[in-house]
Length: 360
Image 1 (spheres, rainbow, N blue to C red):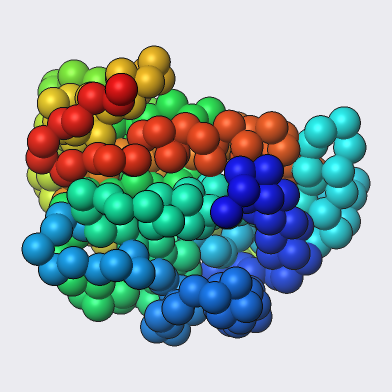
Image 2: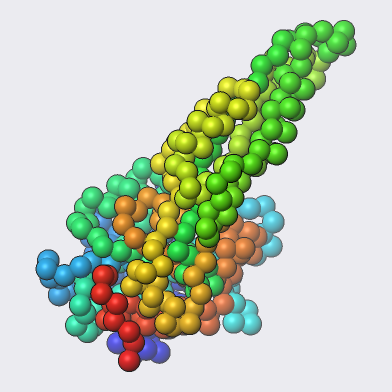
């Protein structure tokens, strides 16, 4: 396939995907479109739920396998949009639209990289996977499809990183905390106000520091992000609940972090899940070495992706920037997509998962 045609087709596919709302757990129409598109261009997609994947046409069970993954779902548009989120618009080299940056640009760039790679003989197999429910870490997303893909040796996760490779990610625990009091009439100053009782506990979360600091990922970070209390203005609230976003490093498992919090915070706490642990890849891994040889700089990511759910080495890398994600008037530069396809190809062409092959 001609390289200029690849660039054009990738950008055109992204425009068409932007026009199809694809919120987490509502990806059916976008998955249908992508599946039919792949058939039209003479590829053979597999499907499970709203997850779509391709395998190298010349599959060889004796070879190692590299997964190329990005997600098809988006968050819902925030209220600040001044453009139509599902009407892609190109202005001054920027393509506006919901999901353009997170992670449509990565998705189409990885797809057409897969096509370029599999047009020639490679020392490994490739799987391209467009997965669902990434934004909510849903059970019908990548965790449901990985068992169907067979043995995978390593992966590229397409997310907006400015095409710099994230070699580690913070983990995540979402904690719900409950503080109690005693109800009473507000006018009589009766009871025990659960909101006031919660203040000391919230301050504990604000000032708590964990001793172990990650080599690249840094400290564990906690932020109280939601609070809920009270039934009406004239009743002293007898319960105050708040939610804490905890970003964990590789020095602890999520369960270890939670156990320390539960022992010290002084209120009732409940973790929604422990599955999203911190993840990292060795700096000696061939993918990382190849990235360094291309002059791109590894870094530690503070944000979470499906990399956390992969039981094999992975790096996160893609066009665009995380700061544009989940924002009004989301956009990606068209040039970023072109550059991404070239970088992905150079990163993966003739790659061995365990035996580094330098570029000529």
